[in-house]
Amino acid sequence: MGTHRLRIEVRLPDGHWAGDVTRANPTEVLRIEKHMPLARGRGTARISGGPDLYTSIDAHPKIEALRELDQRHPSVDISAGGGGFLRPLIDVGVIPNTPFEVRDGWVEWTIECTQTKARNLIQRFREDGLPHRLLSTRSSSTELLTPRQRQVFELALREGYYDVPRRTSITEMARLLGVAKSTLSAQMHRMESAVMRTYAEDIRKVR
Image 1: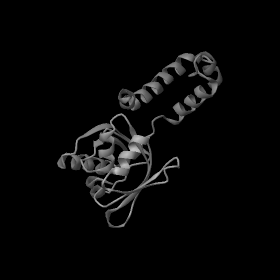
Image 2: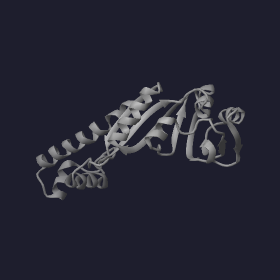
Image 3: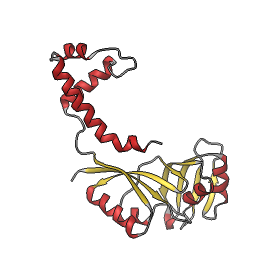
């Protein structure tokens, strides 16, 4: 079964430390660099953010300690029930990739799992009434470009075809590849179309 890469935004519930502190500082971004569950429902995480966020974190009732503030990525110790992984993630058995970011109570996760687990996770978010937005989902088991398209792509990058201004022309690339200019032009059009379709949702999301 192929692996799926799921990108999803989820609103963290009230009482979840990362949701609470970012809702209290809606213009700030909390970045979770690493996270690790501890015994008895506790957890710890490496984070980065601004001074206002750190003040809110330190005052949150579910934070046991905010340590190493002089470091680039301070640590937080989270008490049981303070948030950590949401129940749907635990029940379905998936772990989000790190790092990830939380803004105004919304966390953006990239999760690699089977298609079945991706469907089950979204279903659990619905059942639990957790607001969420599916940003993109795609199979990472299928190759984006064929081996020949990849060869053309690598040559185009190396020769500066995509540089601004361009350092080579399609005519020169066709000569290097030993193909007709019209053949290469059609091949590049198919290649660029595949890339644009694949990343369309990611591009639309940028705001």
